[in-house]
Image (cartoon, rainbow, N blue to C red; front, side, top):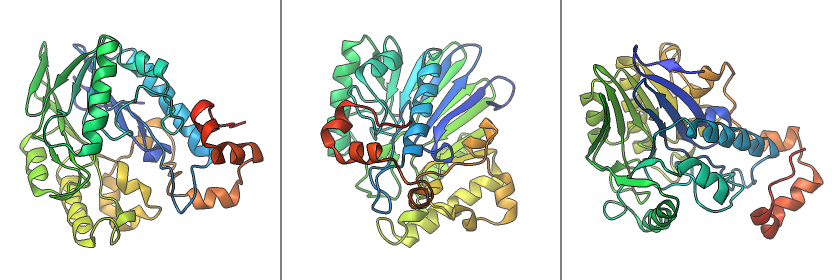
Length: 322
């Protein structure tokens, strides 16, 4: 299921849009230390005016189980920013398939390398970050804020960038960290939610690392002209295509929420692109992008529709998926 980023570093994609959920969770394996990048997974509460389809919840549960499984092997877990598809909250939420027990299972006694909650962060993420810090302290995790810092275990270095914008400069969505895992002459660069990147500063940072492998979140084509300007989407796409031509790259996240994402690339570019689903031996499973079609082709059961309409049930009980 994994891919070698050279001879020393192996990466195992765990969850993202090509596997039916919102996430960029990735496991990094070396003979020195194992790292779980962004142990979060989530579903969009609404898309096309519709709540998630039962098949999305099934994919969510499967993704959560993969994250739980690999967290047992991990020594370090990262949090690039405080959106719920990038970390596991300490409360019950079936849109993240999370419970307090799962939170403890993932983070207990781990080193957690995270985005600083005191600077370059918006209000909502700061609030989540403070709540998460309290929960991590209760379960004995070692929380380290790593903005512009490097954490070393033997010959393996886990380095973090300065915070870069979650998309274009000045975005209200806040900032994210770009994580680099280095082991001798091999480097993987993990660039979540940079949306291409849109930012030229983020692009220069990524290329300055001379990476063996890049894992990057693409631009949100589905938001072009609405929540994000066409100019910024085009900029993110052009920067992404530059990276595709120059580097070994795995494409993930926002771009794959558009049912027609492949139309943005030519044949040669598509041949160079790898998705998380490729490493699972399956075709991409863009459930969110196909939500409207799923409701038409496979209408949910009455029990599911009652559950999704009842806020109390949604908080207390998992969805009926049988």
